[in-house]
Image 1 (tube, each protein chain N blue to C red):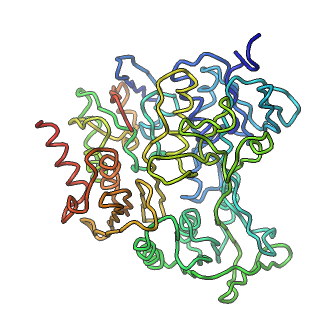
Image 2: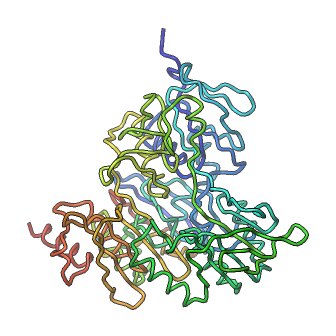
Amino acid sequence: MSAPGAGSGVVVVGGGQAGFSVVQALRGAGYEGPVTVFTDEPRLPYQRPPLSKKAHTEPEGLGVDLVPETFYRERDIDLRLGEYVAAIDTAACAVTTGSGERVPYEHLVLATGARNRPLPVPGAELSGVHALRSLDDALAIGRALTTARDVVVVGGGFIGLELAQVARARGANVTVVELADRLLSRAVSPQLQEHLRQRHERDGIRIHTGTAVERIEGKGGQVCQVLTGQGPLPADLVVYGIGAAPRDELARDAGLAVDDGVVVDEQLRSVSDPRVFAVGDCARHPHPHADGLVRLESVQNAIDQGALVGRRIAGGAAGPYESLPWFWSDQGPVKLQIAGLRASTDEVRVVPGDTPERLAAYAFRDERLVAVETLNWPAEHLAARRLLQQDPPVSPADLAGATLGALARARRTKEVRA
Amino acid sequence: MPIVIFELPDGTQRKVTADAGTVLMQAAVSNGVDGIVAECGGNASCATCHVYVDERHGELVGPPNDVEDEMLDFTAAERRPTSRLSCQVQVSDALDGLVVHIPEEQV
């Protein structure tokens, strides 16, 4: 008797960047078994990063499909749009869909992503109060921005600051309200937080840090003002981005280990069941650059984890997951890029770039470079990504008076000569 | 609409239709051409859409812009004289028949 699910192929739950990356890698590596993708949105998998960087009122303007429909058809990928998975039966190796269909699997990949944390204040349900995750959310915000004059952005994180710049570019009065004392309080070094604040304020965005939103008030069901710890702010549009939580309830309900994300090993397999993998925003995993387990919400992480699992299932070579984390956020005229994982205890050195718009922050731990944040300096970011993955590690002395770009060029020249 | 040919490292060719007014990277991604990763979605942020323009077409496509030029020093595969980031190459009817070569690695 064969094992349950044998020969029944791969079921992927989630049609975001991570789920797409899984199926692309599966077929790319020659996997010939059945591949089924469930995505609860009724449209082709799309890219999310553009959603927060421009205002759009039509989906065509965003142009965000990852690939056209023919891609899936030509590769015999059964893409189930608008269908969700309601339950996983790990003993029988099968999922049950929202409409009651039972679909067996040999390998199950959870790529369920994350959902926005709700804004826990009275009035959050008013018309004109938006969060951003889906394409439909982006279109709703884009439409609101065609007439909005007073925009309040709740949350000074990546999404909030990107949207603040989008709204400002449309000519709206924009105020960012952040509960913490700083913008991007955990995401970037304190040195860059202050620099970014000045940049955004220079563009006319008002920033209230250390400020709580107490309630949102409306007139006739439509938002009209936001009451904060520093007083009322007029608002005809409120957008909030106050973090996300992993969609891990399917795994939890199936008895798989969950701890703010599906807990997986360095192969990205559930620690509870070797037939189940988790990738992208929903996975909590070990990483060679981190102490303990981490959960990373980034395009890079979604793509690289998806690709690793796709290749592994297809039988190809795939070591542990150890891709260098990197990230970007385009905040109006500011292109912020991060390579590596910085810890709050790292020593940070800020270096001006070769133009006034450019800046780099180098984070060192135990005398070695571990992370690099750059503003408007993609070449330095790329040099950081090269050097952070090479031996020998970069020491503070290596960077005395030099950029990573110069160091990378010098090392490459040496390699060529050697 | 212009036809563009992507040649993979193993020598196989993918002939795809590109839309004038878009960028070369988009034609590769939309047609599922392997080897153009484009992690950043065409933002000149990641250098994972690196291509070598065929030497016969180097002048037609032209040189990289300043930001791209700096980034090309740090691509995963070696830089060559005709290296470009395909997200920065505008497609026009003049590029009909263009051949670009995809490097061994992007990441």
